[in-house]
Length: 131
Image (spheres, helix red, strand yellow):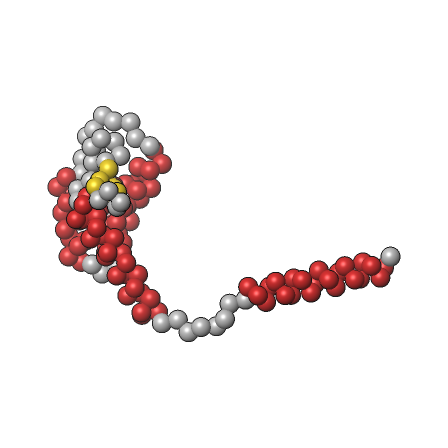
């Protein structure tokens, strides 16, 4: 009986060793500067799509190249949610234009029902992090 437990234990150990070694990552040198530039480029591509097709609205619908306002009228969800990212990525001119859009057009003087979670994370969170 002890021999069979030993064989099972050794078998499990060998299987785990083989599986874990197959998932081990190779040590590759990562060019952080190049990766950062790629991230900035991809963000700017998405942002330019939003500006072209949905500027001043809540969301871009990329397949139809149109927009969606979550509650029938805009709350500027994407601009508010993206402002801190624009600032952190160093897109000063884009951030200034977005900040101007928000300060001139965002109003909470609306009698509408909203999804509390989305409003909290996207609008309150975006405004706080941009501040």
